[in-house]
Length: 213
Ligand SMILES: Cc1cc2nc3c(=O)[nH]c(=O)nc-3n(C[C@H](O)[C@H](O)[C@H](O)COP(=O)(O)O)c2cc1C
Image (tube, rainbow, N blue to C red):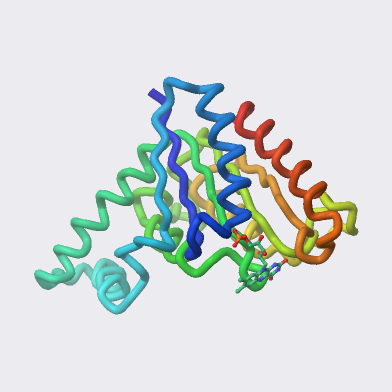
């Protein structure tokens, strides 16, 4: 059975969320086209218990010098491993977020910190390059933003300012995932008069992407 892992980062309630409406178009179309697939959803803004904090960095540093972990570190590492295993076991990834200050929300960065793990998702070769462990998998990025970065609302190409999408692309590439695209709902805040039209078109793209992912 194909496993689809949705990494969703939004701290607001669904009532006010453009991102959620955009995502629902995608996932409803996906489920209709792939009724047999398993879809696992995590809102990492609500719950992400393994940030790159003091204990996580201690585990990282001790591994470098082969030092034993203390009991708290052992417990943290064992519980975190279930999340990493879930990530590795997925066949497809859906990253969903509003753009915050040209980037993904903090909690999505935290999630990526958690799954960037040697040897689970990548390792260094003898030559010092990074080799991914997840080749052949695919990922998609659904993002809403007030401004138009990819020209989908008729503006110029400002995609170099979409640092979140570029970062996701780089991280996934390190893990070996090169089949990665973005679908955007953007420009509504800068052009409120046209927001209904922008959203209708964006919903159409999300629906098409869901059918074909
Ligand atoms: C703290 C914060 C930072 C934001 N930063 C950006 C930004 O850098 N660029 C942009 O185009 N929109 C930015 N926005 C606007 C949101 O990305 C946009 O309104 C999005 O559609 C919100 O989704 P939501 O309705 O699901 O909350 C920001 C919004 C917030 C709350």
